Image: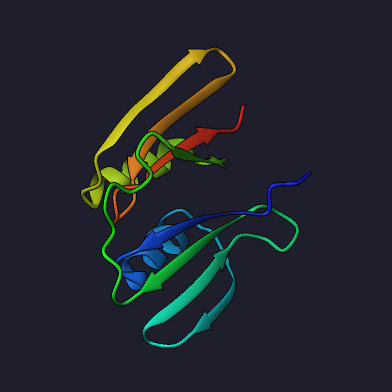
Length: 119
């Protein structure tokens, strides 16, 4: 069995796309829909993706409570600095052992994203 994607519903697609593509550096692999219902798949063709769904009449309540999406990055320190500079609250970095460092940040809808540094 292989995990293909994680779906999250977003209240503002443009804000979410900015966060995931411009700040975190994910690529848009597929985008389709109309002004009331849009789906965007983020990530490389052969990797697990994040699926953003925007529905104009849907209110996001309690996004991902107790769940975080973990992404690996090769520029942990730069990402912490950039997120802090543009007003995101960063929790960490945390290093539970010498081989891993990570921090948490919430996306524009409040989903918890864990950014893990490559060791």
